[in-house]
Length: 446
Image (cartoon, rainbow, N blue to C red; front, side, top):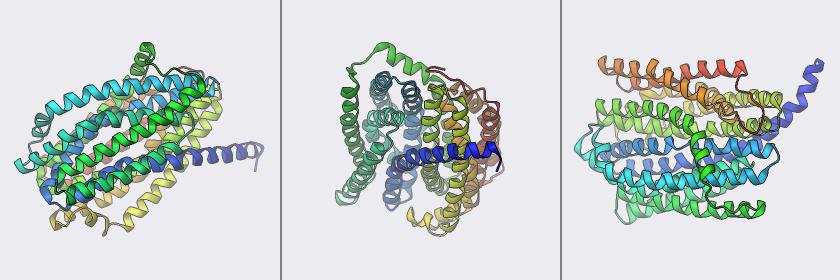
């Protein structure tokens, strides 16, 4: 072992410990969100194909609205981490509180707008009338929980920036338990069907918000922050999240095209895509736990002026993420003959889901590296590059493949090939940026 290797070994060990401390609790908290959808899908799926397909449409629309707002967490975490790394914890907490006020305002506006346009949103997919009715029922109720989902994003972003990933884990675990229990009672006990699923999830989401606000208020008192909204701080948060919003909008457009393409193939294909997308979302959130660790470590180190440490942390996260994604792929391979049956009893839907499985497994290692790189660049505040890369990747890959899949009747396999191509192009673009080190800018602000 050379001198350089001897010097880097203790640093790598420290980074590994820091990554584990951040990523393991974050894993549980992140998986809880798609577990809400998993519980909904499993329970609603046994009501029949029309409710399951309706849930697919509704969750696609709702996921787009919420996914576009993920910058409330992803812009807050590195901002708070940088300020904390620079030694100004009061400013860090205050910046996080600004994010909460922004989330509350955006959530209220989007909930009202979403409730009003629900029929038009659902009808735009051109699904069967029975499927549209189920989707509209679920979506109109779910809009009441939209502000809660955004507040959860902002609060978890603040706590992660303070290196606290355990509190989000506890809140998420309790929220998932409440969601599953409420859904079981309302769907089957009360006989509300898909409406019971939506109502149970909304109630669980607002309970999570109450828990988060109690914890955040304690941090505000500890550092002496008033907690009142600051116009300049809220606007700064909105500007910081602008590029992330554009990046996420491009990604969500591709995912919406997945649902639109599948809806044109038929109810069985759409239901199969719902099963695959639900599982993919779950594994994606699990892999994103390491990206959260990257956001925190890279943001803190750059805030403290440690560029070499930020680069080293990025490399360790990439290695961990690749290893974990390969493990996820093995689990999915072993569960190929079991997992689809947890969501539906329809043989046609199961057969189409099984067609997707090899491509689904192949997606895992690509996703692992891409999500790690995403977290590194978000932690560094390099969001402009992320947005531009995503804007280019979508039209070059998924759109032409999806259109070809429809024209050549490739079925659900063609739909997933488009996603695979999109992930590969993202990998190339983000890996190039990481190697350039143009993202590694030290200081409190980028």
